[in-house]
Length: 227
Image (cartoon, rainbow, N blue to C red; front, side, top):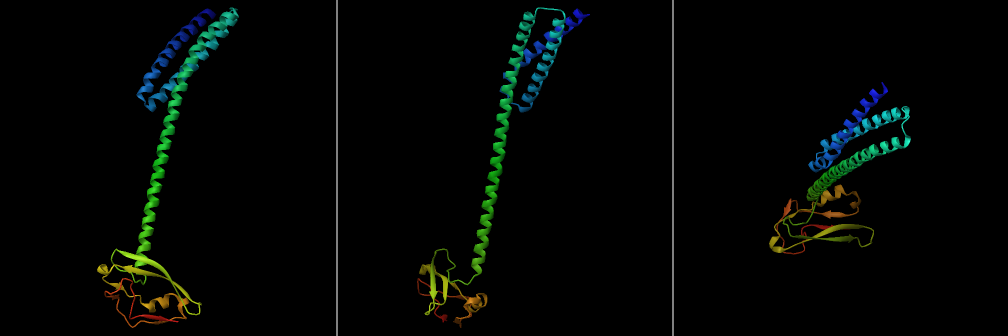
């Protein structure tokens, strides 16, 4: 009965070793195809065969020990089979390295796409904010030309007693391009900026826009500010 079982186990082991060798030899071809799903399946196939071979080796080893076979011969036999198992393990390592590298590349690509999208979204938000600021600025009283070639200079107006100071912008427009100016509407300024209560505004000109003036540095001759 033992010899029959031993013979059956040996036949199964021989079959599994052939399968292991065949799977091992197919590894390079499967890697060259570079199909992730096929490589994952091949890893599982190699692992399954290696586990089955290892179980059969343990079974046959026990039978050999029971049959009082020479221990050195048993060790030599196990060593030969383990060399084949190690070759299978090496193939699994190569396949798993490929899978790890592929996963890292995919994660890097996904992260890069995410960062690119976030950057585009940020740029879009910045453009919208800039458009909003420009739109709001266009509603403010200003002496800028409606043409594109405008030079803006920061300036400060101070009262004689130095108790009042107002930061303003002065606009310079080339005379050929100066078509019209927005009326500053000082009454609106006084209502909006409460800290100007100490200033007196005289603004007899009620027009929305003022025609061309013969100066490069624009002034509003019909309007004046006194303190």
